[in-house]
Image (cartoon, rainbow, N blue to C red; front, side, top):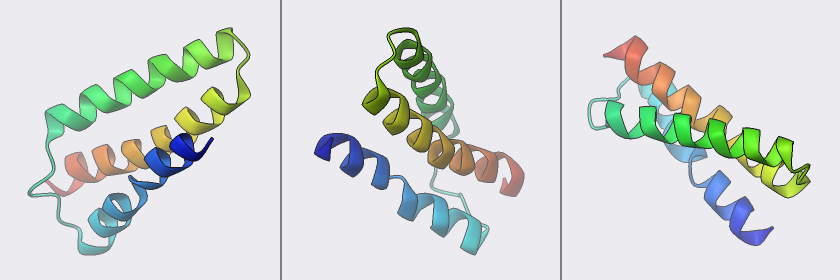
Amino acid sequence: MAAALLTTAAFAPQAIQAWRSRSTKDVSLAMFTLMVTGLTLWLIYGILINDLPLILANAVTLIFASAILVAKIRFH
């Protein structure tokens, strides 16, 4: 659970900064597209095996990573 919490929380500062500054110049579109795709697959897997920590960690991380990806597309 500690690992899930830390890796999930790691995306929050970047998401907040991207939306506050309206700048995503140094954010990689390819990396966040791959990350969102991977997180979606992990979330689906967690749902299929009914693993609550896996579901929660990937759902929250998916929200943060998606916010960064949307900001990258929107403010590009």
